[in-house]
Amino acid sequence: MVIKMKLNELKDALREAGIVGAGGAGFPTYAKLSDQAETVVINCAECEPLIKVDRQIMKKYVREILSGAQLLVEAMGAKEGILAIKKSYTGTIRAVEANLPDFPMLRVHILKDVYPTGDEVILIYETTGKIVPQGKLPITVGCVVVNTETVLNLYRKIFGQTNLITKFVTVAGLVNHPVTAEVPIGVSIAHLLDLAGGTTTDDYEIIMGGPMTGHLCTEWDVVTKTTKAILVLPSTSLPVTKRKHVIKHDIRNAMSVCSQCSMCTELCPRHLLGSSIQPHEFMRALANGLTDTTEIYLNSFFCVSCGLCELYSCHQGLSPRRLLDSYKGSLRAAGVTAPDRPMKPVSHVRDDRRVPERRLLYRLDLHLFDLPAPVREFTDADEVKLMLRQSIGAPCEPCVAKGDAVSAGQLIGRPPADALGVNLHASISGTVTEVTDQAITIRR
Ligand code: SF4
Ligand code: SF4
Image (cartoon, rainbow, N blue to C red):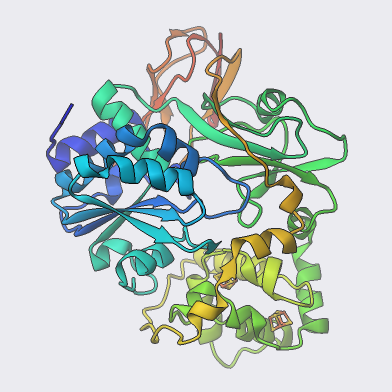
């Protein structure tokens, strides 16, 4: 079936369906779309180790995703759509290439297996050769990047009238049966661990998201529209211990042992692309209390928190990323915004300094957890807790009350009129058992 839509109709449908970026910070997808787009990049880079969602759903739902991508390209009036897939995802590449003749506006771009290829700015450079100016959005250079799972959600809305109520989540690490589960949004992490056959040990910590950029969570937390992975890791593993550091100790360590070797800067993927971010300079300024220039501190806005500097580059075990994040947060809270700084030329050694994903896995000591995690559908759940804030923008306001009967897909929350945000829908049928200013709970 071929469907053509005007851009405004498509935006309205995506907002109504509650669709946000499924693979990152959760930017409302409708707000990304633009009639200025020349190129649409479909992100199937699956940036972080151990996450196995996009490569599998691109293969399983290949015609749906290609149809959604084609629709996106046509609705925005773009010239082409690029399906950006890592070289090692051979089965996915074969499935896409076999179907491409039916989608003349789409082509495949094979990416190297390096980290962090899924970063929007890096992905745009790799696929189009264009450089997004630091602090600016991809549309500045005529590009829109959309995650693979987001395109599937778009397809399901436009071709099947289905609102966003499920999420694909890879559950890996210390579990009996690693799995990529399609579950109702709002199920607990404990439920997900059960679906993966339970944990193999009692001594573990849970990271929601990838090992590089995810955050620690508990069994009582719930799946949101942006949850891509649940990793059950040894409590002594590097991604866990790093996240348990106390910031004041990180500063003290930086003052004591930063050798100013500058490896953190030499391997920083944004620095190699020409950004002003130089983590070693920031560490020097912070450790020595330098206040004669604000430039070094303001450059913290250009760090994308990929985590390479602290989980891979630094031989002293220091935490430039955490300190940059903390500093950036304080600047934002004080109302400071990113400065306007020109990019430098792309480093001539960039190609040699990209970090192979396999090597990163070994450095993190997570290679034993890199196992198949097949896609399975589990749309049954006894209870879900749907957070009112699940994306960038305004949180939803509930439009149901305790005791109401709801059916799966029914509208239960909407953002304030004219605010950046998307609708929220019941992910199972049942009765609303609680409504707070944070979440709506439904029991089957
Ligand atoms: S890599 Fe570590 S020791 Fe070297 S400059 Fe950066 S923070 Fe300091
Ligand atoms: S986290 Fe570190 S390596 Fe990554 S962008 Fe920021 S400074 Fe660069």
